[in-house]
Image 1 (tube, one colour):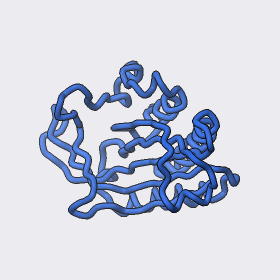
Image 2: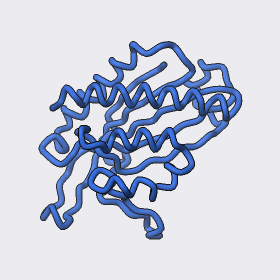
Image 3: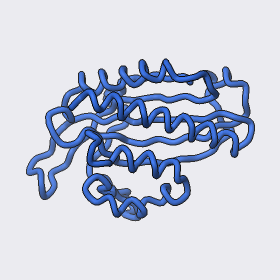
Length: 193
């Protein structure tokens, strides 16, 4: 399994605003950490039970993380660096991860160290047609009922891909890789307590 991380905190890079809502207002942040019964409101959880299991773990009371956004898909569009897998498609997902409220959220070094430790843990994973990428990005935590001021901070987008010529097999590889990533995240997060 391939694994890598990067820091994308430049002016033109993606930035998450929390809590988020689409401009159309038809999609919004669901606080699964504090309201786990709302997990079923996330459409992707119904479509992809593997993603639901991942979100449940990340938002569990024992986790020092919580999730903000997610998606999953199959595509035949591969990047040049993915040609090493020698297949015609990939099944992928992303999940935006946040540290629970506290000083860690605003600490770029903590985010970078966490992402690096994940890639090191996954380097021990068995060879398989899958990859994971961890992107540290900027986040604006807007004032809400519990917070009186906007705070600049960071989050990590976790991309996981499974590769194969057909969607069923690519999804199977993705599911295995997603479990490996989940275990690595929980193991690395346990060291933060």
